Image 1 (cartoon, one colour):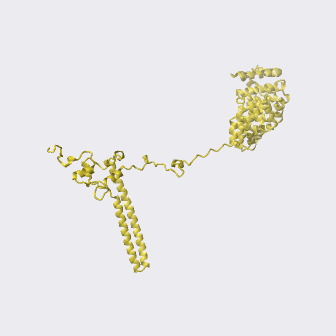
Image 2: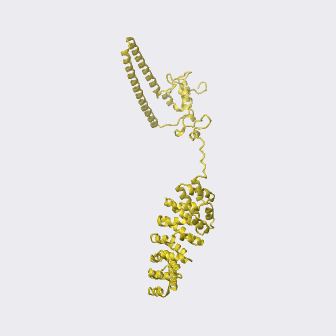
Image 3: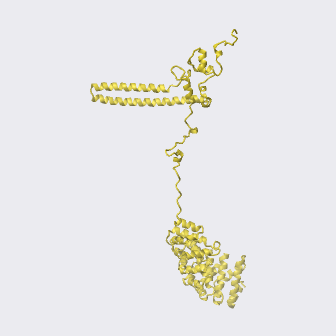
Length: 478
């Protein structure tokens, strides 16, 4: 302690912790320039290659196993690549040799010497390329820091290389590239603005039908045109839409029925009763069925359009579903309208036609036919006689035996109207064997059937005379 200051015991004591490795090595060597610093010396100082980079730029820590796997994968890829290049060079060499042999056959000795020199030149080039690729594949040795060993770059350059950020997006996504117009790649991929939706054509058949189905009566003129000139499927849809808008439960005040008739829909609907497709016939009849319910003007319009003969034809030859609607139109035309309407139906030979089909239709249709005959017979002795002459008494009497309440009560009502004021018709009912069926109706558990049976019994007893009364007493009807 001669000079009163502290002196280091050895050179290593002059190196403070945290001093840059290059400076530490310089102090240790006593030199004024940076010596070569190996990884071993750097490790003894607690430093690594990645520690040369600033903290914010240091790469993420990788496990040794992952690094080893990556290196093996890279070595494998390099071997494959080398093999491909070697095969390619051998192929090229063989091709060149083949060309050279051809040239030798056709050329002189001077040409052959030029070919050999060319071949040797290509070999030397191939060997040079091979050495260059091998040099590029060589990785830095673990013993020295790149740039600080023999013939390497400086440590600062290596640290700067480590500090550079990676040029890839996370999850492998590519950054959008701006186009020349300033838009992004996403905008280009989207194809620009979406095309405007096609405007709806209000005059298209589908639009007209959709509007009518929604209750828009302003399209009725266009709908009538479809009924007249449209395709069968469009005609069916329009007729169905009209039928759905005109039931009494929907059209409570009857205004829709009036609007449809005013638009001229009745004549084309009547024309569709002769369509070739049964479903078109059914929808047309269904629409006319609803249009004629509780509307006297529409009933007259249907008769004026010559609908009765077509309806009767459908009753004889139409499909069962078509008959169900056609009979409803006839029932409306004969009930609650003008007297001329009943006459028009009867004049179209409706009575014999309906009595003929009475035995071949469903119970619902049978009940409707019984009502039509009732409407025609009421207040008309001429039409009552026409019904009896067409075999109506025996046909209606047979319905009493069916046991179907709705059919029984309607048949009994029609027979009652027929026998009023006619002893002969009362005798015809007795001769048709009606009394045993009437006795069963009087014991029916259905109140309405029992009531209608009682009304028929009273009419027969009143207008039949002594002989009819005696037969009724014998059958225990009285």
